[in-house]
Structure formats: C-alpha cells, structure tokens
Length: 124
Image 1: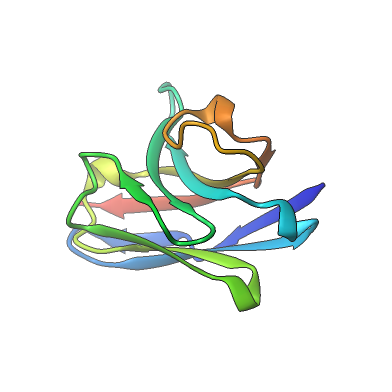
Image 2: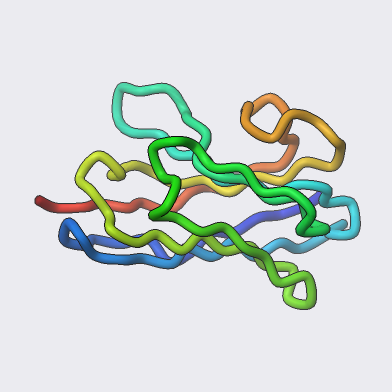
C-alpha cells in the first residue's frame, strides 16, 4: 500500500500562486506515476498533471499548460504541483494519486492510490 497526504492548499486571489505537495509513504518503491486531479462542486474529477516517477514523461491538461508545473523529489518521496497565474476556474479540491503500473496518465482509473485532497480556492 501507498499512503498519500496532500498539503499546501488555501485561499488565494486571482493571479496568485500556490504550491501543493504530496507526501508518499509505505511501498513508495512501487510508484510508477504520480498524478494530480481536481474536482469542483458538481463536476467530475478532472486530470490536471502527471509525472512518471522516473521523470521521463510529464503530461498537463490543456487548461493548466504554461501555468502549472509538476515535479517530484524521489529522495523525499514527495510530488509537487506549482500553480501560478491562478484563476477562479481553478477552484477545486486537488487530489494527488499514484499508480503502480504503466497505464494511461490522464484517467483516474489508472491510479490505485489516492490522497484525501486539499482545497484550493481562487477569489476574483
């Protein structure tokens, strides 16, 4: 099992920045991909960004390209999501997720471990 704990969410004005962290524990050697998803009230969970734990591949949703940056620190078993130029439309609960296999990065069903989420609220 892998446990994931997110942190770094909060309230920020439009145009501001936040950095989310996702600390992994347990069988971290089994992590193949770490992803970030978000879910706004009344909406389905949507893909934000993902990174192969080896760092060999990164994917972003079109809506966040150029504004968000995903990274990871293998030595700390921690993933990060740097979010710049935030917009009210980015308001959601952000979840990190981990996959232990080489599945498609952008769909929730590819991930078998999930964190509880951290709230990000962007005011206009």
